[in-house]
Length: 379
Image (tube, rainbow, N blue to C red; front, side, top):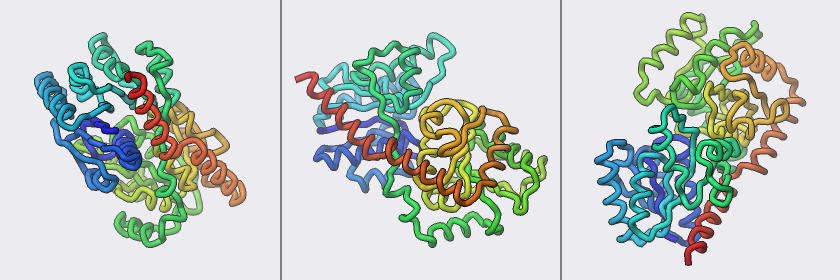
């Protein structure tokens, strides 16, 4: 197979990570894995799995650029004999769809988010993600959204949950030296305090405000917890400053640490005692929660979106009402008060659940199966 995936950038995020995993699977199956993107910090990892990067300005939404990208994609498809173009974002998906319409390449999409539509024009813009010969939804939550929003028939809709690299996200595979290196890099001077980890780029819908308020609302404890906000601002410096000011106002500034982007998330999970994913808008899947569970870390997630499929309330973690600071604070207190035996039982349940339902290998096998079905449906 010769597969071309299209994604705006290769920075950080679930869609980007899935792009690499699928590239790896295509190469392992003896095919070629091309990726059209503007690139980013994940480029070395793409190269390491055998993927081939082709640079185009596919992050642009400018109509003239979309048309120019279409022409470039037509040339790439013909030159490289691409069989399937797999689009993972709306703007480049339009260029990819037009290119496939003008060549013999097949068009597949993955619907990575809810893509809120507040107008008919926006709904039309979003509709390209439902125009694939196969439309992959990365959770049952997203599949339901696609059915309601676009009426995609069942024979074109496939649910393939995002996966976790179970070899990478395994506590036994993370040496103490990597954890210690993060501890030093993040300048954490309180070794014994419980550490709450909130991974995610700094943006309001990820719930950093709510986490800081929940930290401040916790009852007095023998050792006061610290909150680690892992993720960069990506230009949202005003929001980052707002978080710093909120921590100062609530008198928890010495216990809130903005540590920036992390390239070693397994070590970050190993460093933590509890993982928070309190998004105020629904996550399409909840990959962070799945990775934490694989690492044997309990998770408190907002009770909506794909997180409902990843975290089983009271069994593998906790789910709380989105935006409810009091509920989040109470859940943190409950989690930190667990006895060793009860915690061990929940940790085992979490890891078993994630390894059974959300492995990267299952995602790779399912995606390759979709590719074969598309190719075989048109002899």
